[in-house]
Length: 112
Length: 114
Image (tube, rainbow over all chains, first blue to last red; front, side):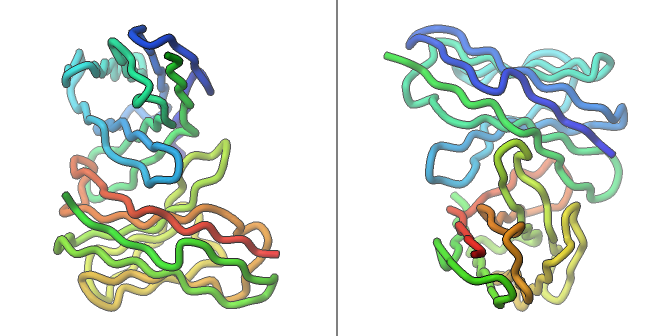
């Protein structure tokens, strides 16, 4: 069964700093990778997806995927206090409808 | 943006009680999901559906039933609630079922089983 592990469990970065969140997965048939963000008291919201090896940039957010190494990461440049949230990595297998497997999350705090 | 609503937002029940959690989405999405969120486990899929009358089993289905009555409405039923089902429950929807489709989540229902 797919295992998705995130590190670190929690992270504190200064405002304007770089936050780096890591995610490893176990199934080599994994094809779809998502990052979701959850602010306190709200439901998770999709931040970005990445389906091909390499980097994908959306504004201050860059996702990196290396399927051979079973690794995906998220980097937040110029972190803002509003980025303080719980970040989930979610992984889906290729093929017909498959379920996303979520990691346990990384809690990010951005301090002014 | 896709709208997913859940009710109630908070619920307290006793062991052995019956609980129904409701979810409605108004964006004509085909797929709907029920998750539970627990510290240290992230989000775990309980049941999902790809249309009215359809039900698929997720990863942690024991103790839960679900029913999709319409395109918009998806219900989660706990017929004999246990303290282990104390959790934060989220409903989500997506236009497609492939993992390429973004899931839109509701605000959550916090359930406490005493």
